[in-house]
Length: 597
Ligand code: ADP
Image (cartoon, rainbow, N blue to C red; front, side, top):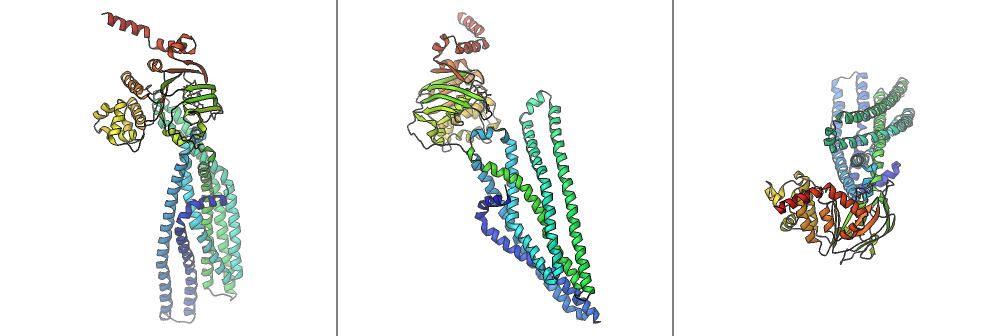
């Protein structure tokens, strides 16, 4: 991305605050003029004082000079204080407001992205966060540079340069020559540093991803005693990062030295030339100080320009990533227009194939009919494609080929927001947000009153346990056990009250009693709804009205428990394995003995 592109992209973020920009620019321009005052005053002071001395006059004659100098310098400083305050305050205000808008724009945008965006390896949580955070920091810095700093710096330099030419053409020429040389060296430096900086970005991202993954897997790391292994992994990464940092510093220091030399060389030239002109009688002695100060007014902003140039190049790298994420329009979730107020919930899948972005084909030629008012169970070994199928029905992914119809209308034509409003999804591991139990349940319906929240908790058989907690519904939901959190998620679905319900192993992390209770309440809500349940629980499978059996992404069989069992196919194989794992023989034996007593 070029600087011009970036400037255009940033304009829309700065536009609402253009008055701030104008105010700051005005103040900085005033500042640029006041910055030249010292040079003039110094020349005036040196010339006037040496004239007084040459004329053999004493301190008395110098009073006017001293008073004039004091008044002008103090007046300038007072003005400068206001100018600098205004400049900093408005500039900072602009920076903070733009940062806020950039962050919000990003959040609003990524929320609209498809699930595949988040599952992409390049977008792991840590990487994405580093990229966004640094992007925003860089961009706000760029806003400051583009809209607040560059122009005044140029103004400062140009005004000083004009004054140098005004003083003497050759003196001006030296000032003028320094600028392109400085620019050239700075440009070379930036080119040399560019690739190293990019590498540094990658290292930083990987490093923060590494720390996140350590935190997430801390129990596993500890239980396997792999602290040393993890630490070595991080050390290798850290070493690469350090080498890279040293290399960038090395390049920077070399170029900084060259630039410093060029500047000092300029000062020497100015002194020699002015001294020559003074000795030649073309100028007064005050000109030496005058020219040196003007030259430093030309070079000081240019020296900053190099810092800005560096920051801009640094910023560009992250700004580029920020806009890549913000403008990933192909990641936007597709949505149709269709809304059906009387959704029945009949799903039909016709020759559906689906491949994950990493190339793994998870569904092959699926034909299925999922009836409303019934519980349909998806059965199959782990990895068979059951969750993938549900993800397709929820429009998290779109099939490669084939069609999915809901009440006879292609799912693609449905308004995605409307569709999800009508689907309740309970996963094996549900996300509980940082907040109270009440807030977490109400997430299912933000308009629900407290009684409705309690009602939903009762249906999910969690109310009694909540009431035992010291802060009851105001307790932190994240402090609940896995099984309790699961029931909060089920309550969340009850409060949403959707006509279509997908349950992906909803009771896998629940104890036997809770499973039994949840089963009852799920039975109660299946009326007038479409319920699809993925389950490894024999009782849930037997209780469902229709069963589809999947294996390696293919649909093997479909029917009721009795029908399928008699077929002696995949279902009976899985069912028998489940029964054996439960040790059904011993259980029935035991129950038989108890009953015979
Ligand atoms: P099930 O729910 O039956 O256990 P899944 O639908 O989760 O199976 O997975 C089906 C296949 O798709 C598996 O081989 C799994 O590895 C693969 N898979 C699942 N999720 C992803 C993903 N996000 N990216 C790539 N492959 C995936």
